[in-house]
View 1 (cartoon, rainbow, N blue to C red):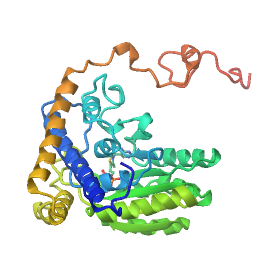
View 2 (view 1 turned 180 degrees about the vertical axis):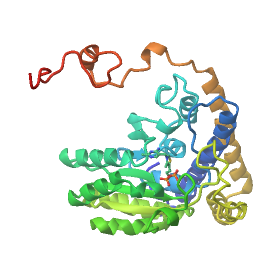
View 3 (view 1 turned 135 degrees about the horizontal axis):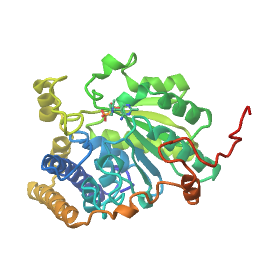
Length: 358
Ligand SMILES: Cc1ncc(C[n+]2csc(CCOP(=O)(O)OP(=O)(O)O)c2C)c(N)n1
């Protein structure tokens, strides 16, 4: 993916639309299966699903060029898939297996594929913002023409890292678009109970940055806004906040039923009348695509997810002695060897004068 939906050749447009539709369905099917596998205790740790948010996920990722960067929070399965990570390696990662895209060391919240310029999957709320901002600074320092898309939830905008990152991105004119996915709730708190300014895009103005809001369930609108803002970032070094208003159907994580802080009617209103996949499906039908062709795509995506579960089950557990690989900089073993057991900050061989004051 990497082009906009709008092209001049209508057949190309339909083909591209079908590819985006398949990506949305794949994401939905993947999440449904992930929940099933989590409940069957095949997946450990936390597991955050993005069912209902597919137009935002697929629409923004398709607006990225191949060598742009993508950084997200922990609700990252759909982003990884849309960026081209295979369902096999994403599912294997959820299972904690060796063939996972992070070699089984990251799990659901920390999907990663550096080759595809997907720099994770981060579990600390707003922890991904300074990383994305640093990537954008690297682009500028190396005079490259790329952009960074940094996804966050609307709950992250009250964190210090949000303000620090937006301030520097604006001050230094960094090529980054902060995608605030406003799915109405944090872990269980509605956005207007947590944020004095609940219209998240307006917060960009505090840093003299462009901000705008888009209907995050409308694929066309998302693709248009994301393509425009990423182009401005890439070509003019203009950072921006894009707020996508959408809804998550499931609980905050699989462990949350998601019903204590919102009503069944509210969920039904979004899933019944504003579902992004249904909306796209009716657009395809209106454009003359046969229902059979759409169903074939849906079946195909479902099969891909089924195969991914088999792949994940067959993949071996990572070797125990490799679990710490990649965690520390080369050469740091000598430093760790000098640390006193049970004393996390106390090295035997301190680099400053241990006899201070004597
Ligand atoms: C620094 C930090 N504080 C608290 C948590 C626990 N926590 C995980 S998700 C979450 C809510 C975030 O909501 P939002 O940013 O809206 O993202 P969403 O889950 O809706 O995608 C919280 C408080 C955490 N992971 N990191």
